Length: 123
Image (cartoon, rainbow, N blue to C red; front, top):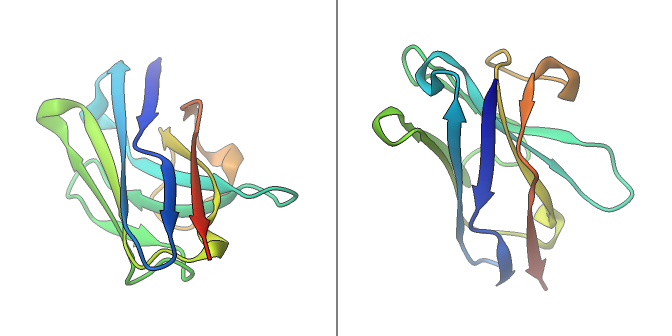
């Protein structure tokens, strides 16, 4: 089992930045790929980014490529999502995930989920 707790959500203006954190506990954090999904009101949950547990290789959805950066600190059992140049369409609940594949993934591909943190981008 892996327990995940997100932090860092909030309200920001268009063009602003936020950094989300994901604190992991339980089963060895460093042996799991980590990722982020998001879900906007009335929309399906969608993949955002993932990072490999082996070599920190990263993968991003096209919609966030060049603006978001995923990273991890295995010593602190924490993953991060740095979000820059935020747009109103980035408004969603963001979920930290673990135990799934690297690359474009479906929600059911990931075994462990955090409770989510709200990100709201005002226009």
